[in-house]
Image 1 (cartoon, rainbow, N blue to C red):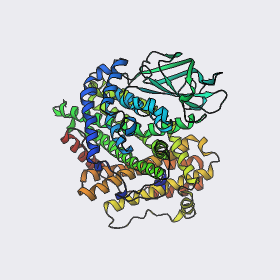
Image 2 (image 1 turned 30 degrees about the vertical axis):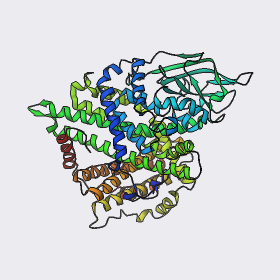
Image 3 (image 1 turned 90 degrees about the horizontal axis):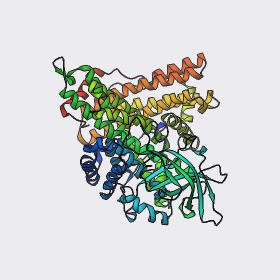
Length: 590
């Protein structure tokens, strides 16, 4: 496989060959061994103890985290010199997927490995890494990330926590309050964001939880993720050594945003593991439960649900690992340009701002769909705390709020894509202007006798044209596009559906080139492409009718209808074949 990748958002303007896309079937032996070690740990230490974990015993959770650290799981992304394993971003995402099936544990684990440790790894100096990262990588220390405040959620830079330099210049005196702090009840170190004096922009500090003036509140009583310690933390004249500032003064907001990019993408991977767990639980129940003298899995309505759950999980997984390899290529590029390893890593991740927002939103909404339908398949038993699907249903809901709400991330998809285009990273406005000039002659480009994958490639090209046309006309008609959030949401939905659909089509085409034709995987692509066409068409028309006059709207809608024209699919038969494979396997094996 060549080291060819697209820049963030470039999928809107450029196609890529399947051979240049990573698919999860290509994980190497080392990666599979690491994954199996993680699965073994989850099956031994986490899954049998979910009820105990959900009691919220802080020390119990901390001990399990420390055990994972002893196996090296906490330091998978940390270089060898800091007691880690120095694995690629792709491998990190595979681990995130597996841990994602661990309910509350996954939240504590991912917080520690990501936002609780990586700000020091990526932005800290050598002394800070030696002092803190080595202990965080092994589980000797557990980390937390303290950004949100009572009056500063999505608008994180409006926080009031303040730091003032002491008279002797040796400490920053920290005062303020943080809330919704994951691992707050048992963390040893905290990444705390505060404004120095009257600065407009945040700075970042490493604070140790046992320092005088640090007060940890009780755990919040939450809807879900009950085993995760979530607290408020108060800072009362806490003396933070000046050498514990991370990066430069005023760099905290950049650090916070960069780390959130990473968190979003890894959350997208978490949702795969959680979805696979829920799908397997659901099909097993459907294969055991009888109603009207027949197993639930024999009923068409249940097969429809099972198939949709599989389709959504499969296509999301395709997109996650596609972009993960892109990140690794970008990180290597930055390192080759002489950028220090830590900064190269976070800059490589942060570069994919469009994709990480897509995968956070799509993955969290995919999982909500899967657990909701899974609970429905379980019927009344799904509402009982005896069943894991009940826990999964409750635990899933936070993901649409974590790492920036889905509302914020939908805006980011469009804002980042347009920003990249205007910077010249790729061109969507030039081709869109040409489409607009020739709007009356737009064709769908169907060719008689085209193959299955030629057809899907044509669909994706047309979907891209539909998006370009809608984005271009929105920017021409709306002076301040980002203030019209309903229209931005329409554009965001179109972009997200395209990226997911294209990733899945590329995966299956590449997989067939390696292992031969797989009719069930073709069914997945058929059904999802068919649904994607409808969703892109609807969102485009909703947006167009919101900003265009009657004559302009008529022309644009006609063009959108042409560009989203796809052949009908026997979705009943296709979904039944997908469901039947799941039912026969009695677990998710796609």
